[in-house]
Length: 215
Image 1: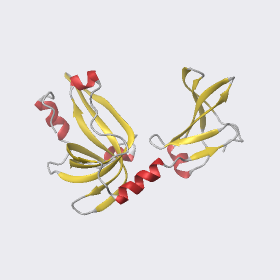
Image 2: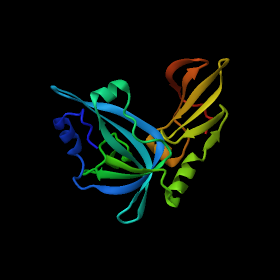
Image 3: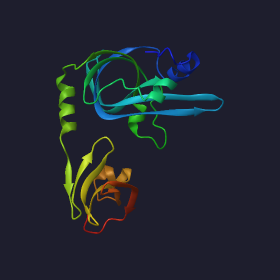
Image 4: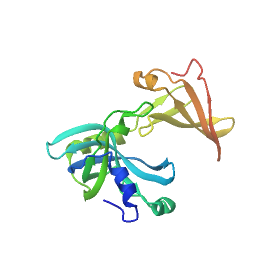
């Protein structure tokens, strides 16, 4: 799926991280997608976009592989400027032709899904029926909430953080419970309680240590 507006040298640099062999997979996508760029000395920024997936099925073996990953594709400067890099919808099961990432090592400071990546070659089918992936999507859609002395917080499953709107200083404000990876994994109480907005205005991310009653 080479965009003709992407220079050949840039495409070759981008695709070098992926195997030459193509394979077909089914994926179920999440709500999260993003685009960005990697600056290169003396060259234009190499840009790409991705849609996160929740699980995939290897159609050669039939194996279901749960766990988040990314379907990635390069984007041209024009697509970047026009924000027209969309390829895959959220919460949808697709049949795709892809190329798999060669080096699966998770770099320091990266989450595991960063190294569970595929290069998108082509979209073969949208809205595929698959009971295993549909069950995973149904679980993803199921809300998860906690309640403490501050208010009720709902898990943002794409970010792995709890958000909630509560009354604060006379305004309805958006709060977020911030955790470290270790604390998030072990399910103990949050390290920080952060307010992101108050009333109709964003105030950035202001955090404080939670009171002993917040668990």
